[in-house]
Image 1 (cartoon, helix red, strand yellow):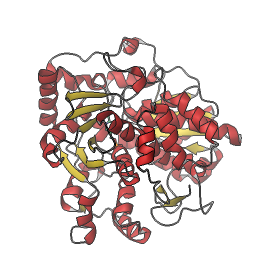
Image 2 (cartoon, rainbow, N blue to C red; image 1 turned 90 degrees about the horizontal axis):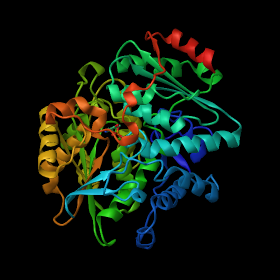
Image 3 (cartoon, rainbow, N blue to C red; image 1 turned 135 degrees about the vertical axis):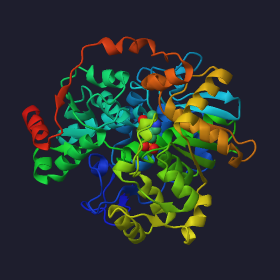
Image 4 (cartoon, rainbow, N blue to C red; image 1 turned 60 degrees about the horizontal axis):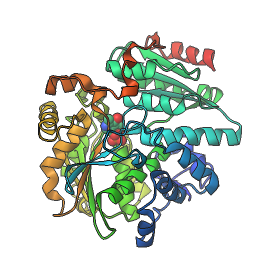
Length: 482
Ligand SMILES: *Cc1c(COP(=O)(O)O)cnc(C)c1O
């Protein structure tokens, strides 16, 4: 499988394969990598895959996208990644071997696809754990090392650290905004004692941390000398890994491959739902993809109006579903590439506008009508909606859901009428409630429970450097520790 750039020039090598793009970020022309075509999954494969374990299914799907790792090695990587021991937070009553079980809210009709059973209790573990094992494998094969530099507002940083801890050839320098994450999130990251993990708390906001990462990455000499890499949400391997659970969810929610399913996805950077879009393009019988945003509704606005109007950082609202506080959805370009019939010149033209801080408007074009062909429906929610949804889920169903999943459930309840009669709708559970305890207390006047193995996490010793948001100081820290 060869990869192309959404803007037409995938760079060196001219026709990169999976391992060539694994450790990099953007394509050299500023676009995003996508496979040159989506593998088509027919009825015969669906029939053969229905009974597979998660790891077996992951291998079948990923081997369509990864053709430059020997099959036996890829199989071993999938087997090592998707185990009940890694995804150990499956809740009582669910089958631990499922990795991503479905919990029905209304049997056969509305369910939660549990994606938060990994080490950091958020769906990002589903892809990041694979990434950790792929990085270690590819680096060892090439005799290389990498120093991952990232910024996090919470979930990404901890998922990356838990995926990379103890991995040969990999160091992680993770910047986080000092004092801005929840106590549980802080404890998850800062209590790691692995020598290859460095936590840097920056006295500022998430954006300050993000700006430092950009400044360091833009210093090409420093970047090359210190082998700086990233694991951010545009990484193709993360999107590819996320395709697997759409198939798994389909098999869990249906009894035969004649049936369809629908998904509702809490969205920020459009990474998770992009994987759903690709699963649908591959032939998975997905009737609808419901996209849910919070108050930062740039994507909802696009799917309703055809106008994409990324907001400025200052316009980004700080909400109680913070992992969706995004005003420029970095993976959205992948979907628009397909929407404009894979015309890289058109994508380059649209993103010239975006990069200049201007909106683009497809409402008067033939592309706008195509949105329905792609099955998208969208909605948004507010803090009051989240509180009401968390309460209703607890009172009616005895379930405590997290704030991001609540955004999804709200949109599923509101827009469920768009899903054809008889088609089950799965809301993707993107985190566990314990990560966002403050809002749960506000809604339910009680504390969400931590899984037994993570109780008392906040009391463990923490390892973190507090630093000013100063690029030179942070570069010096990296130089001193590589
Ligand atoms: C990252 C994240 C999201 C948003 O996912 P995208 O892939 O950026 O759309 C939603 N919920 C939680 C809990 C997250 O950590």
